[in-house]
Length: 159
Image (cartoon, rainbow, N blue to C red; front, side, top):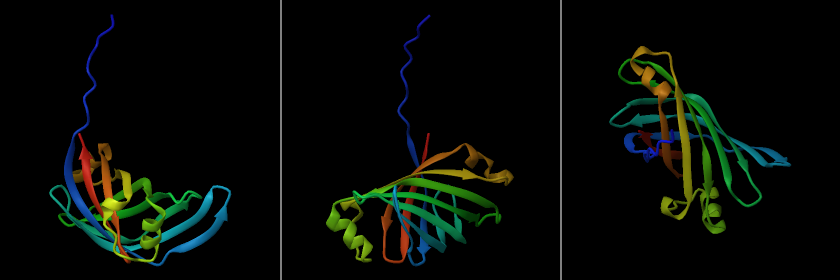
């Protein structure tokens, strides 16, 4: 029997803002897939209705810069909850791209309105901390803004 159940559109609930301090860009070099780069994540804060805490120094944002200027992002880092000190692993995968001039200005560290470029990631969490186990079953979407020495990410939990 064929049932025609509608597929619900996902909802989004505001989760938090991550303010991540970044170190100097490290260019690994050109590869057949593009230029390989990484950015050390040296600390930061997390503040929002669903999570407050800090970004623990030591994470890395691995990047592929493609020939068309698009930047493929694969960031891996740890958050520490303010409430109980619990550690939560974060994996944030996505894209940043925009007009050539806008991307050049970002690379120079200039202030650029985030409405001028696309910066989105899909965020997953892993933890063994009892109070935060629900994050293991959470998918979040982040919208970002790149600044000279930090990245701001606003996260929304998908429902």
